[in-house]
Image (cartoon, rainbow, N blue to C red; front, side):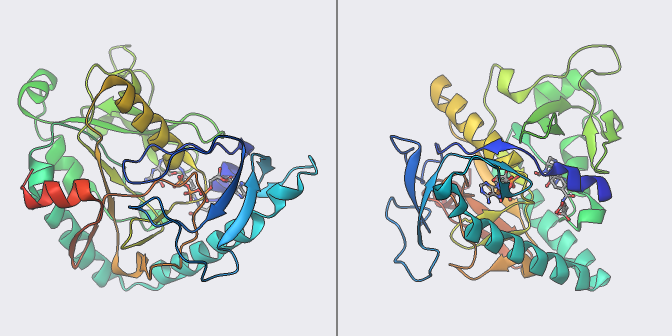
Length: 308
Ligand SMILES: Nc1nc2c(c(=O)[nH]1)N(C=O)[C@@H](CNc1ccc(C(=O)N[C@@H](CCC(=O)O)C(=O)O)cc1)CN2
Ligand SMILES: Nc1ncnc2c1ncn2[C@@H]1O[C@H](COP(=O)(O)OP(=O)(O)OP(=O)(O)O)[C@@H](O)[C@H]1O
């Protein structure tokens, strides 16, 4: 995990959101940052000193503000500091989790996914390849089910088409590439399994951003979540960047937005208001925890209610 530290990077924050139940991008690069309620355009009441912070686009390095002297950007520091604090607390709780409890929760979460109609009916999806060292909710059984049709053509006709993450560089750039077998994966510098850009036959793997059809579902990892859909990732901004780009593409192509479903151990679900967010953060539609599926957005409530 040492090399994972290299994940820290330069990044220019961009402020557009395309989640159906989040917020429009502000007209200029300087905006007001608040703790926002996921399914309305209204900000939460300012119950914390961080709740109304002026923020502007800025370039950062390793989570620290660069030498641009951008005073407004430094005001983001408390938010990212708070995020780092929560990450270390949750990492500690995950580390302390009893292995047998973890196994029980892994099974319960995967069973819920495998039995869900939105999973059974989905034909095209993105999912993460769980990493034991990161203590992520296991996706082995879900992936095995998705990939069970070994023949690629048969899979396209009857089964599901799967795209999995591949980190391309340290500028929060991640692609989702098509795989048809776990053998398509190799460990990257962070010890996460990911696909090579080219398959065994020398063909470029399909990038979900260049596909002719949209995806129905995205299974997301994360460090912490709340029941209003806030998601705290590992700090790379990879998923938030990908999700924003994908949501924009789906809008342009008139595709239905995919259901964003995060998988979470019980200790990763925090009280509402604890996870601070920036306008870059994308909310999830639903959580799957060992206690059950928690639909959050109206899209998720509809799909779960109608069994689709
Ligand atoms: N399974 C999986 N694949 C994924 C992600 C993920 O979170 N899980 N990603 C999601 O973005 C991308 C990779 N991003 C990553 C970002 C950080 C770390 C990591 O090891 N973080 C350490 C802390 C490092 C530090 O603080 O310097 C950790 O969380 O313990 C790993 C992957 C793409 N693929
Ligand atoms: N003080 C800071 N000011 C501005 N940007 C920062 C600061 N600290 C970190 N960033 C950057 O903001 C981006 C988003 O970070 P954030 O913590 O929201 O990611 P995340 O939601 O955990 O990641 P992911 O989307 O991959 O799950 C990262 O690229 C990070 O490097």
